[in-house]
Image 1 (cartoon, helix red, strand yellow):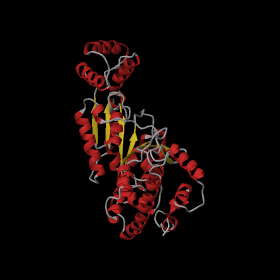
Image 2 (cartoon, one colour; image 1 turned 45 degrees about the horizontal axis):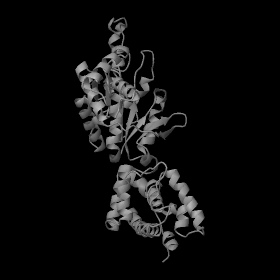
Image 3 (spheres, helix red, strand yellow; image 1 turned 90 degrees about the vertical axis):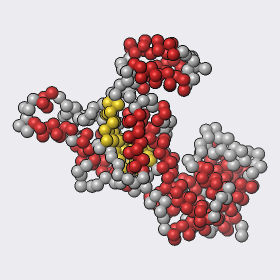
Image 4 (spheres, rainbow, N blue to C red; image 1 turned 180 degrees about the vertical axis):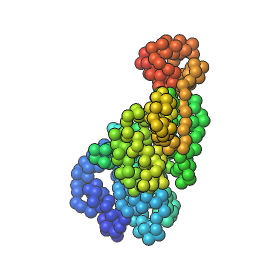
Length: 408
């Protein structure tokens, strides 16, 4: 049976047949070598494919394209029906044969066998797909089960490509962030208790156990936002995604929760630098969604907020003067938003000893060619024109020193 005939038997992954490169590779349409090479070259550069380009491109389509199987696997955390698994098993045999054929055909190709793209980009979890479809490891049944887990953890399409999103209120949709932070917890010095609590709560959330909304509050530049970014890197392959929502879009929170509930991923809705003046009322939308609204928050969503204020809403001395007939009600209203966060983690400023210790650790990790005494002198001078001792100030100082050429 020819390759084109076998590909035409695809059921679940049938949308692959609509791709012009697959059509050319599989002999489904008549295409010259030059035309097919031109299309492969365009795909390689557009997608950052590196290695055996035809093989990498088919793996890319398997990972990213939507069909009923990745959609059900992602939505239901890898638990799909036996009927769907049986259909996928048939397709897996066809795709394994197809990939083996093009791997052999292009194995010694002068251009495409070991191609290096201008901006290389590897499929998340690529090693899993290579093992299943290129190396031929495992039975067809085992391949199907591993694919279920792959889509459950990594997702497909938008969820596979991005670690974090922002909510586009104008178009009411998720927009993937293009430049993700490489922040990790080992780059955040100190705050061991805060980091431990944050990791434990997030791990429980991902495991389907009870977990709390979290408020990270305290002095500016102390690592609150960085800690949340570190979570996305640590737990990406366990299905965690971040969604940042701007304050002016809080009124759309019910819509946002509805969109997120349609995915199987676990989402942290990030409310960064959250703060309200006493006359601002947007916090009432947030308070209703966090606790007390008619619509229950989906099980796959938690709220993580950062703020410089313990109770988020500005408090003034007049609150204590009891001028209002029921002044206690006014105070309770102002602290009720913060009460919606079951875990509150305080990030305080460092003393000088802690600050200098952090600076030395960061400088050593970055290969900065400077002695401890020189670094201390530079830090004290820098402190005179910058307020506070925190990670943000340290980062600015080190960037300045790097710029001065003090690096190996």
